[in-house]
Length: 172
Image 1 (tube, rainbow, N blue to C red):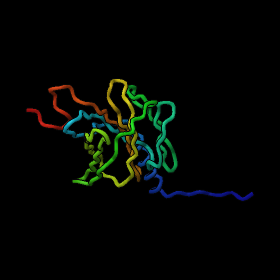
Image 2: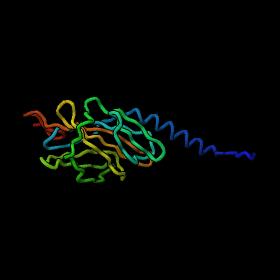
Image 3: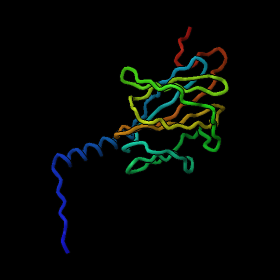
Image 4: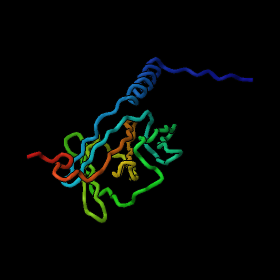
């Protein structure tokens, strides 16, 4: 029976090792997800994903399943998310590229409250869903990316207590 011999150049092997090690390191780092609203308190974070692209997202056993072209990752949802209670009132209204970042503006279809998130620059589709939070707020879960620059994150959306300033607004 004939045998097949595979050979790879040293450059290919070094590049593959760099990609694998970069993905492993990136997956552990969460950073704040900048948000601004005139009427809401919005705060959250995002984390890199070790996949090639975000091709699809689904829920499975209180985990976010993010599907790439070649692999999928399961991300446990934060404990304050009630994944059984979907909120369908938020829409992504505006996407804008600005100075090395992407701005996403979401608007509520009944109250017309809105907020803007700042994410790393991308032209990938933004996939998101909103759920009731266990503490009276709402939680938006997002995933996006391509070309191995992939992320998932969440923001908690709440009305601020009377007398306090919403996200990103100047305090007097």
